[in-house]
Length: 161
Image (cartoon, rainbow, N blue to C red):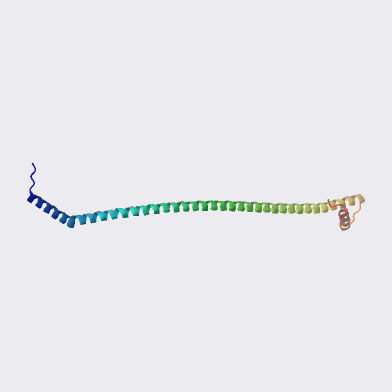
């Protein structure tokens, strides 16, 4: 069945050894070199991916921190705005009250001037009426200056209310 031929065996072994030497010189080394380069490339890509993942996590933390700071700043600005609005409202109320008090005081002073003017006018009219009445009663005419002086003295003796 199987015949072993020593010459063929030697040539087969010699061909195999030559093939292994040629392959090791020209194929194995370059093939191993390519595989090593590919392995290094994959390792570097994985390391870059890990760095990128780490950087992304750091950026996410920084973004959360910035968002928290922005929210805090927003709340601070809102509080300051409310405080300022309350202060302005209070100032406006105080100014309005002061203005109302000034206007009330002015009206009171104007009323008092009108009352004083009316009293003075009334005195003059009462004096004239008193002079006319006294003149008719006495049926004599005193000069107006004397009558006015008498009436003014009488009116000054009356209570001011």
